[in-house]
Length: 324
Image 1 (cartoon, rainbow, N blue to C red):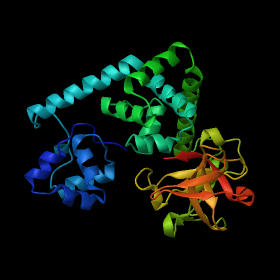
Image 2 (image 1 turned 135 degrees about the horizontal axis):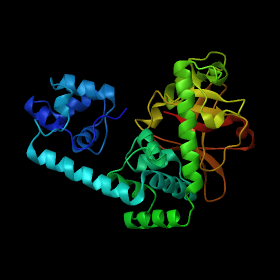
Image 3 (image 1 turned 90 degrees about the vertical axis):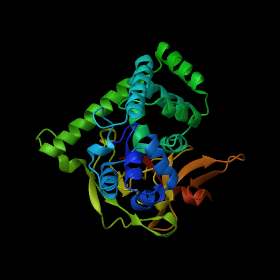
């Protein structure tokens, strides 16, 4: 859940109460650079972090939001300017067109959601919503996404227009709309237990606890919880869930996220997968190919390669979706 949108009043309240950026960073358990981005409005806070900020600064949640009654004039004007910029961006391209185009271009470049989100300095949740056409973007976020895709921002905008005019995005937009509607239907059914959906049939076991060296310990005989199978996976029978509790992914993904894994599907270059180093110890990897054509799994934080041999492919389970 994202509450704080550019600009906020955290910096003002922090200085008023004599709290340093480092103190606030330590309290939230994040880096000093992250606090700087939050105060500038380039990074968002979830509800739990927002409440913790208010408690640390001894102020109300309302004090952290910009409003014309109690905010400084320059802050209010910056807020208005930012809103105008966002409206202009999304008026010219449209949220659905923008999201579909970004997904199209990302796939053409064989990039994963995680790679683009990380290089654009976003959480996976935020970037995924942009590709789904459910979230506006600021000019700075637009530039970051362009950089993550290896493009200049003007070239990216021109390519989005070209794809839209060529009709190349219609299928993706329809897919996104259908996926959103079906997921909402399943979510509503789960909440209200309507008779037209067999909720029990949609549940899959979720395994995994955090292990050493950033691994995930998976005991397939003992589930930690259950999750509702995404609409796109309703026809798949061998799906299981894994808690994304690996510390190697840092703050890119929420620790509440669940990976849906299909062991019978073949993971190819560009896919995210689980590599089982042993029967119960797995690592999250991105499947890559080196200059000689050898496949390997790339792990993050720090970057490390695991080269695959012929016997390893049965140890690689493809991640087919991540629920945030």
